[in-house]
Image 1 (cartoon, one colour):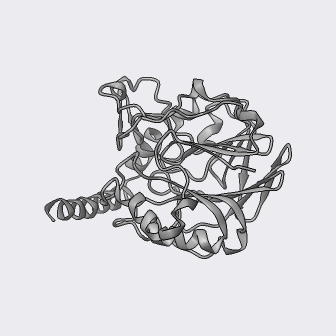
Image 2 (cartoon, rainbow, N blue to C red):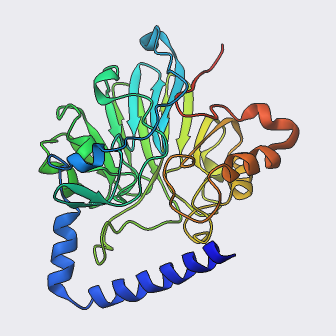
Length: 315
């Protein structure tokens, strides 16, 4: 009770502080600048690194797979669909947040990324759902091949352009981009897109990916909504299940996620956005346990439960 009360007090104080900042243009400018760091000098983030993932990803014959996924951690998924490899919301850093010179002001990883950028196979498309620090991590993006096409939400291009990415496609809800037989359609979600304070013009997306008769829904961040009903059926739904207490207005509870999974008629669901960063009050292990309970006798539809695990659709 004491911890929960302190958490609510912290949230209230933070809102008062941010309301103050919103009235100070110098502070807003500084926050925006701190949100654009590349992480080159943040060596303090490497002190006391998080423990390694206990499961090693299986990338054997990766390019021969029709539909496969590896959970690298948080919302970062290595996805093979058709003939294409997609990397969602790449975050490899030990901390995410505002850059303060030698360190990052933000949450620390509880478990290391299951793969480093150098260990990745060739990535054909980088998928970015929105501009929040735990989804769009510029130090991580700076370690990836700048020639890789990037699909992003509306009005977020500026956050990767100065890193050297030039093949950037911004999508609004309902718009589709195509890459070598892979169709990526932006889907409406219930969230928000501001990176710092007043940049509320930025978009925020989920995505439907279709290739070679396979269909995957990547939900990004979303509260409960019924906009995924017409996206189905899908072979795999990749859905965030954490950070709902007290942020249920922006992140669905595990039970709500299971309802959305059924609404889109997903064969399998891959829970993400849990067990990596502490972003809210619920215990770290609670989201996974709750969605398992919600699934009941159908829990075999839940694939990949630990960072580093690999799933492949069996023909």
